[in-house]
Image 1: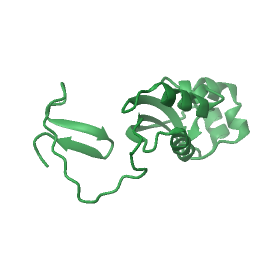
Image 2: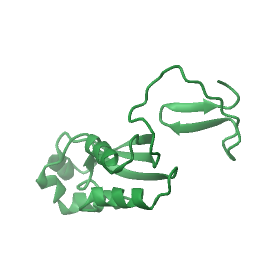
Image 3: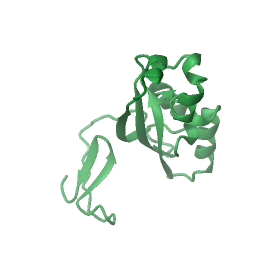
Amino acid sequence: SNCVVNLSPDKQAVLAGAYRVLRAGGEMYFSDIYCDRRLPASVRGHEVLLGECLGGALYIQDFLRLCRAVGFTDPRALETVEVDVKAQALKDVVGNARFYSITYRLFKLHDLETLCEDYGQVATYKGTVPSQQHAYRLDDHHVFEAHRP
Protein backbone atom coordinates (compact mmCIF):
# COMPACT_ATOMS: atom_id res chain seq x y z
CA SER A 1 0.00 0.00 0.00
CA ASN A 2 3.04 2.28 0.28
CA CYS A 3 1.69 3.74 3.53
CA VAL A 4 -1.81 4.39 2.17
CA VAL A 5 -3.42 3.06 5.35
CA ASN A 6 -0.73 4.68 7.46
CA LEU A 7 -1.32 8.15 6.01
CA SER A 8 -5.10 7.98 6.21
CA PRO A 9 -6.67 9.89 9.11
CA ASP A 10 -9.45 7.24 9.26
CA LYS A 11 -7.66 3.90 9.13
CA GLN A 12 -10.75 1.94 10.17
CA ALA A 13 -12.67 3.38 7.19
CA VAL A 14 -9.90 2.27 4.82
CA LEU A 15 -9.94 -1.27 6.20
CA ALA A 16 -13.75 -1.41 6.25
CA GLY A 17 -13.84 -0.27 2.62
CA ALA A 18 -11.36 -2.96 1.61
CA TYR A 19 -13.41 -5.58 3.44
CA ARG A 20 -16.60 -4.36 1.80
CA VAL A 21 -15.26 -4.63 -1.78
CA LEU A 22 -13.63 -8.03 -1.33
CA ARG A 23 -15.75 -10.97 -2.34
CA ALA A 24 -16.25 -13.80 0.14
CA GLY A 25 -13.07 -15.87 0.25
CA GLY A 26 -10.99 -12.95 -1.03
CA GLU A 27 -7.78 -11.70 0.48
CA MET A 28 -5.71 -8.56 0.54
CA TYR A 29 -1.92 -8.27 0.79
CA PHE A 30 -0.31 -5.01 1.77
CA SER A 31 2.67 -3.53 3.55
CA ASP A 32 2.70 -0.57 5.87
CA ILE A 33 4.68 0.91 8.74
CA TYR A 34 3.67 0.01 12.30
CA CYS A 35 4.97 0.84 15.75
CA ASP A 36 5.52 -1.11 18.95
CA ARG A 37 3.51 1.47 20.93
CA ARG A 38 0.93 4.22 20.56
CA LEU A 39 2.61 7.41 19.42
CA PRO A 40 2.07 10.74 21.20
CA ALA A 41 0.59 13.70 19.32
CA SER A 42 4.04 15.30 19.04
CA VAL A 43 5.19 12.37 16.89
CA ARG A 44 1.91 11.91 14.98
CA GLY A 45 1.92 15.57 13.92
CA HIS A 46 5.62 15.88 13.09
CA GLU A 47 5.86 16.88 9.40
CA VAL A 48 9.09 15.03 8.63
CA LEU A 49 7.95 11.86 10.42
CA LEU A 50 4.62 12.00 8.55
CA GLY A 51 6.52 12.32 5.27
CA GLU A 52 8.63 9.31 6.23
CA CYS A 53 5.46 7.28 7.03
CA LEU A 54 6.48 7.05 10.68
CA GLY A 55 4.19 9.70 12.16
CA GLY A 56 1.06 7.84 11.05
CA ALA A 57 2.27 4.42 12.15
CA LEU A 58 -0.35 2.44 14.03
CA TYR A 59 0.48 0.52 17.17
CA ILE A 60 0.59 -3.09 15.94
CA GLN A 61 -2.03 -4.30 18.42
CA ASP A 62 -4.39 -1.43 17.50
CA PHE A 63 -4.08 -2.44 13.83
CA LEU A 64 -5.01 -6.03 14.69
CA ARG A 65 -8.00 -4.78 16.71
CA LEU A 66 -9.16 -2.62 13.78
CA CYS A 67 -8.84 -5.57 11.40
CA ARG A 68 -10.99 -7.76 13.62
CA ALA A 69 -13.54 -4.97 14.14
CA VAL A 70 -14.20 -4.65 10.39
CA GLY A 71 -14.31 -8.42 9.76
CA PHE A 72 -10.72 -9.51 9.03
CA THR A 73 -10.74 -11.97 11.92
CA ASP A 74 -7.26 -13.47 11.62
CA PRO A 75 -4.67 -11.07 10.12
CA ARG A 76 -1.52 -12.89 9.06
CA ALA A 77 1.92 -11.27 9.03
CA LEU A 78 4.06 -12.45 6.12
CA GLU A 79 7.19 -10.45 6.69
CA THR A 80 8.41 -8.03 9.35
CA VAL A 81 11.44 -5.78 8.92
CA GLU A 82 12.54 -3.23 11.48
CA VAL A 83 12.80 0.33 10.15
CA ASP A 84 15.77 2.20 11.55
CA VAL A 85 15.43 5.87 12.35
CA LYS A 86 18.89 7.14 11.43
CA ALA A 87 18.73 10.92 11.93
CA GLN A 88 19.54 11.86 15.52
CA ALA A 89 17.03 14.73 15.48
CA LEU A 90 14.24 12.27 14.59
CA LYS A 91 15.48 9.72 17.13
CA ASP A 92 15.11 12.43 19.74
CA VAL A 93 11.47 12.95 18.71
CA VAL A 94 10.46 9.25 18.59
CA GLY A 95 12.34 8.24 21.74
CA ASN A 96 12.21 4.49 22.36
CA ALA A 97 9.52 3.79 19.76
CA ARG A 98 10.46 1.03 17.31
CA PHE A 99 9.01 0.93 13.81
CA TYR A 100 8.42 -2.02 11.51
CA SER A 101 7.49 -2.53 7.89
CA ILE A 102 5.02 -5.43 8.03
CA THR A 103 3.36 -7.20 5.11
CA TYR A 104 -0.03 -8.57 6.08
CA ARG A 105 -2.56 -10.92 4.49
CA LEU A 106 -6.16 -10.17 5.38
CA PHE A 107 -8.86 -12.71 4.52
CA LYS A 108 -12.59 -12.23 4.07
CA LEU A 109 -13.63 -15.60 5.46
CA HIS A 110 -16.81 -15.61 7.52
CA ASP A 111 -16.18 -18.75 9.57
CA LEU A 112 -12.48 -18.23 10.24
CA GLU A 113 -11.40 -18.64 13.85
CA THR A 114 -9.84 -15.60 15.50
CA LEU A 115 -6.74 -17.38 16.79
CA CYS A 116 -4.19 -19.75 15.36
CA GLU A 117 -4.62 -22.96 17.36
CA ASP A 118 -3.12 -26.40 16.91
CA TYR A 119 -5.61 -29.22 17.32
CA GLY A 120 -3.41 -31.71 15.49
CA GLN A 121 -4.81 -30.83 12.06
CA VAL A 122 -2.85 -32.08 9.07
CA ALA A 123 -2.71 -30.64 5.57
CA THR A 124 -0.70 -31.79 2.59
CA TYR A 125 0.27 -29.22 -0.02
CA LYS A 126 0.32 -30.72 -3.51
CA GLY A 127 2.76 -28.18 -4.96
CA THR A 128 0.28 -26.90 -7.52
CA VAL A 129 0.71 -23.13 -7.11
CA PRO A 130 2.91 -21.81 -9.95
CA SER A 131 6.32 -20.58 -8.70
CA GLN A 132 5.70 -22.33 -5.36
CA GLN A 133 6.09 -25.96 -6.36
CA HIS A 134 8.33 -26.82 -3.39
CA ALA A 135 6.52 -25.01 -0.59
CA TYR A 136 3.62 -22.67 0.10
CA ARG A 137 4.11 -19.91 2.67
CA LEU A 138 0.86 -18.92 4.37
CA ASP A 139 2.47 -16.43 6.77
CA ASP A 140 5.62 -15.85 8.79
CA HIS A 141 5.23 -19.08 10.76
CA HIS A 142 3.27 -21.51 8.54
CA VAL A 143 5.07 -23.09 5.60
CA PHE A 144 3.63 -26.11 3.85
CA GLU A 145 6.28 -28.22 2.13
CA ALA A 146 5.03 -29.96 -0.99
CA HIS A 147 3.92 -33.59 -0.58
CA ARG A 148 4.56 -33.66 3.19
CA PRO A 149 1.83 -33.83 5.80
